[in-house]
Structures are given as structure tokens and as C-alpha cells.
Length: 550
Image (cartoon, rainbow, N blue to C red; front, side):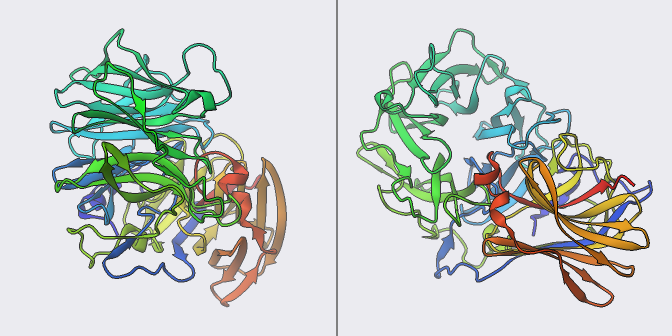
């Protein structure tokens, strides 16, 4: 379900309205259906569940305008980019739009899936929304602005002076503004993972960095003698006469943590909190929620504080397919320091609702348990993601059908492919798509996708007078056909992948006979986990068409 505003913006979320298909159709899908399996989480009356945004929604940043909250996530090389959510109560979130939705803003051509847009910061000030972020290997750090967070957002103002990643925009009470960011340390790194946090002053009127204002805030981390790694994701706040700097430390995996520093003046050094970290799960190695960090804070109109942050839900060791997800916790202040979670305590899976939250509404997490698209809106649902570019000449929607025209003969190549994917948001799920037609020379089907070098493909293609269904495994870029079966007759097919515990089972159902044909044995889901494939994204379930080569 989309909000009215999100629905009205659906036509621009991928840059333009999907064109009517005028060229020869090559693969036609009638619908796509994704459904979580197993029981829904048990949530007591007056409570809500963590994560608030299940699936690949990492590096959350949050701001507030009046009584409405806005949240943005990293999107890496997927388009549209920078998803923006809005909420009235921090519990019920709706997708408002995407800040990056056109090629004039940025391009990710030929990038690895885990490059592109890293941890953004969203802020509201004096009638204008700001997002500052990094396009890794695609231009560096930039700022975009909008009067409405649903868009349109401006083209980027690039910040060539600001190196590194994860920029923060802090606007002080006097209107002066600053950028804090991760970058290389002063001098030569002392050890692997040695990074630093730097700060610049920026002119909000011109969005230009003020020259000669660069200042070192943190070298290494809380205690450089202990060789802390990957100090990043900085955010600065001004609270009760103190300036607080909070950062992620330890790397965005099982050693991830959130640390905090403070100072009375930005011209003086930041001092670390003696009880750091204020959030981590690294002291709970068997926890089913791990890797907590990359937090951002927000204050409610009533004066309460909350923090959004990322965490993961592994199912076998550190394997997880749902990516780094957005969680939330109340934040309290004691003796002049913020507190999130006592050492050794698990991240709660449910929380009491804030006083102004309505228990009668459905949450984003609840709605995510079932997604169905019958391609009858004239525009792609905003949950669909493409690879690298905003160009969509290979996809069209009309009369309740999605038509894909092959661009490449493989998903392994770095070039733009005819692929659309929806986030995997649950450990157990069933996803199906009705394939109406594949023309000779075309292979089409269902993909479970982590990146180009790690994915599964259930494909169907013409084979003389018959059709061939097969499962292809791509592991470290090596393509192996692990199963195939010949299909008799003609007519639509329903392609299905079922996540059974730690395995994926593929099947094809003939809609005329209703006969289900299992294609191959169950395959390990760990192949498409972040732990196996590397990178920073979660798995997608998608549709793909390719040239068969005949």
C-alpha cells in the first residue's frame, strides 16, 4: 500500500512513466507475488516490532519537520536511489519517494552493486530538506535539496574538497553549518582500518565548503592505542549546551558499535564517553540480531529522543540474506550522555508504542509480508529496483502485463541488464511470477540476486518445439547449470522459488494442467547471503530477460 502522495509520484520514481511497449515483446509477465512464510512475529497489544524497515534498508538517517519524521537509507548502485520514508509517530512508515530518480543527478554505469550511494544524512532547516551523501566511484560527496521530501530533489552540488565517505550535515542554532565525514587519517595509517573523522564549515546559501576550515575531530576512534577500526557515519548534535558527536566504530559487521563524544565548543577537542560503546551486539555472539551501529538521533515534539540504526538478522553463523535493516530504540540522557542499550542486552524485537501512535494502523513491516504486483498501474511499483542506470527502454507496462526486452545474454556482465528486483524482507518466503510468453531467442525467468557474481536464475527458453526450464547457479562469477527439465506444450507458466529454512527450491507450474514440476534439488540459501557474496546489500527477488544466443 502506498500513500496518496507516493502513488501520485509513482510515475517519476524510475525517472519517467513506463512507456507503452511498441517494439516486439520478448518476455511477458502477468504478475509477481511475494509472501512471507511462517508465522508473523507475535506483538503484544500496544507494541510494535523491530525492525521497522525489514529488508535491505541500511545506514538510516532521520530528521523531523514539525510533527512528521523523514528517514533515508543507503541504496548503493540500485536505482531509483535514496528511498525516503515518512511517519507521524516513528512506528508507521510509508515510502514517500526516492531522492535520486533521473540520470541528470548521478549515474552508476558499470559499478559493482555495493558501490554507489553510501550512508546519507537527511536534515531539515528553515523550509528546506537537505541530503548529503557519497557516490562512491561515481563522483564523490554531494548535497541535494528539496522543499518536499517526496521530491523533486535538485541535481547534486558536488563537494570536491570533501573526501572520504559518510558525510553529515550539522546546522547549529546560529545558522552556521558544518560537514563531518570519514576520511584518511593524518599522515600514514598506523594499522589496517585506521580512519579519521574530519569537519568543514559550509555556506548554506551557496552550498560551498568554506576554504581553510578543515579540522580533525577524531583520529582512529575512541582510543587509538587499541587500534579501533573504521570510525565512520558521524553525526553532530547540539543538546543542552554540549556538542555531541556519535559515530559507528568497528566495521559494519559483527564488531559494529556506536560510540559518542562531546565538547562544549566545536573549536575544542571532542572527549569520548568513558562507557562507550552506547550500542553494540558484539558481546552477544549467539544473538539473532547482530551488527548494530550507524545510528542517528531525533527528538520528538514532546522532548523524547529516539535513535534509528542498522542491524542484521543472521540465520546461520553470520549468514543473512535480508541485508542490513533499519531498527529503532528509545534514547535516554543520563549525566550528560546519551544511552541506547546497556552492555550485554539484546536488541528488543518489540517495543511499546509512543503515546501518539495509533495501534489500529498497519506498519510497514506488517504490510511487507505480502507484495503483489499485477502490472496494471501504468508505472512500476516503487519497490522495484534496477541495476546501475535510470534508463528503462527495455521495460514496458500496458494492459496488466510487464514486458522485458533482452539487453545482454547474462546477468554476470557489468553492463545494464533487463532486470528488476524487489527486496527480500523475510528469512522464509515464497515468490512466484506468471510468465505468459517467451519468444524464440529469449530466456526469461525468476532471479534470487545478491550481486552479478552471486545469484540463482530459474529460466525458461524455447528449445525447438518444446520449452526448457533450468536453474543456473552463479558463484564467484562462475556460471553452472545445476538442473534442467523439458516442458511439454504451450501456455503460461508460474515460476516459483520457495525459501525452505536454509535452502531455496525452484519449481515451474503449467497453468493449463496445474502440474507443478520441481526443478532440481534444494540449493543453499547461503550462496546469496552477504556473508558469502560480500558487499553491503541484501538479496533481491527479481525478473530477468536475456538473449538466448540462438
